[in-house]
Image 1 (tube, rainbow, N blue to C red):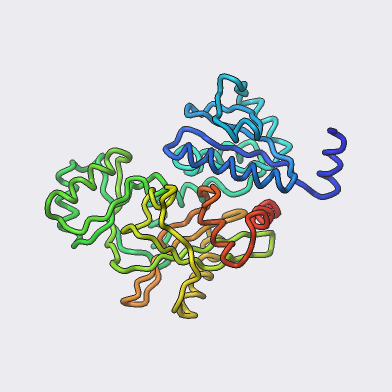
Image 2 (tube, one colour; image 1 turned 90 degrees about the horizontal axis):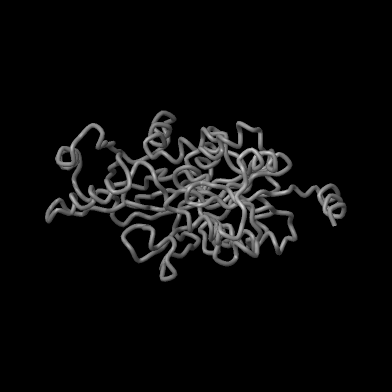
Length: 348
């Protein structure tokens, strides 16, 4: 069986994939569910994959697909020493599926790059920039990419009341407050009025998850676009541009992951050719400048009142559950999830 597997890998140029998921993060469950769906796809592709689960203390375990498809119980699987884990990865291509702090922020890629493990996604320094909303703003402003005006506030420098008073001086509602770190819209809220302690509650919501926050004007009646891009050596593939439609005020964590989510992707109507071209060119330029590998999703806000497009988020790592927006972007052009995954694998 081992000889046959090696034969398959050589003849069909198949790369052995090491799927890394879980970890000490608020998005632990999103990562596990992403691994379950990818495992299902890899099984359909008959692709060689090794699964490494990180518990909430970041201890790695080598596991199997049938174990992750049910509830993962670490009392029945053996942890693996970090040195052994790194040695095993030497013959694989690592596919990190960790989200949030300790993974999406570049730390996991830094470890892999230090030991020269080839990866899907990365590099670590680009993930540092994209995960940190303040660093993202620094990058976009330095390169003159269109982005909304913002202010940064830190609890390490200002008291709660000072931050609230400064926001009231700096902005006119509606505004949107975002934690500097964290993904999946955790801690984000819209403040439409400074009355009735709405701002105070939003500041407290962020304080519970982060010590820093960004504040931006909130565009009423904005449109939100996303696009996926997969880079295969010298070839670049774009997904369809998808417009997000949902019932909530903004794409919060419930709309992203709840079974009752109203969010859906559609091909945007009445989108000018100039905005269409701008989305694609900005996406490709940012991917090149940050030297991002393999795949990327870009998020944009469009203000129909003044016909201005803004870069909202750079996302080189994101949930890949069955309902993931990344799959849906490619589905808009009648491409299956299996085909999209194969394109990602072929990017190494």
